[in-house]
Length: 303
Image (tube, rainbow, N blue to C red; front, side, top):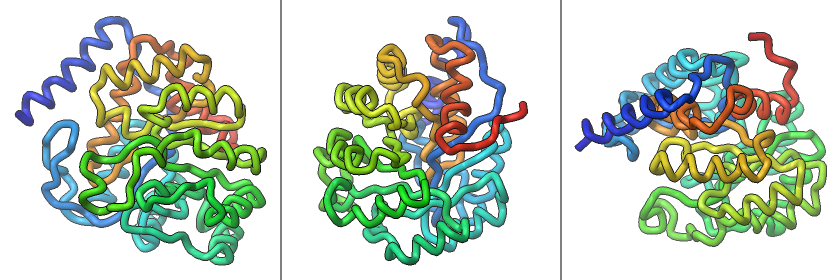
């Protein structure tokens, strides 16, 4: 079964390139990576293959190797502080660390702690904010001091939208709610903070219409295609991506892998976007690099 799934991924990628998709070879920015403890032998949910990262050191080393392999010049990571510090030391300027709120981490540091981290440059991002895992609405008052702080320091904020692994409410996160992943809940945030650099993680999948409505109404809003570019069926991802491109949002979509405990997921994510035969080379360049570079206010890249 695992071999069959792996062959299916390879076949779909080869078929896409045969149909006219041009392989991308430029720089990549991955706006959605994670660091943390390894999970030895954990099967990849897309391929069924066990993770190649069986120790914490493996997870860090193999993630950086995959980044180099695919020309990922910058990765935005979130996770426990000690792991982020180690990743920053190993990856240098290619790693930006972010304040984290996700499953198993149900609180953010106090605002005054984050203020110091933003001032020092220790943290450059706020996200992943996985409020949904804890039954929290990011538009509610609990998050307001953090949003005000991010707006003050011009810090990008990435908020989890969409879904989570099947069975999440029965496992880590009994307070998880599907409805809290609807991007439309972020409209009050966008109204209160027009200068906030906010992006929808997972591009709101499967809430296509709501995602399109928000992107249309709020031109500053961006979205990443992380995890859906490798964990859901390839055709479903391509249909969703093409719908967002057709709606005119190709200049605000950003690449992300959502690499968790499977470093090989970075390759799968790159293939997911690269094999989209409907994307022009310029559109791939925008998704893989230029949109994120502009959003993050980076200097122009030199290939």
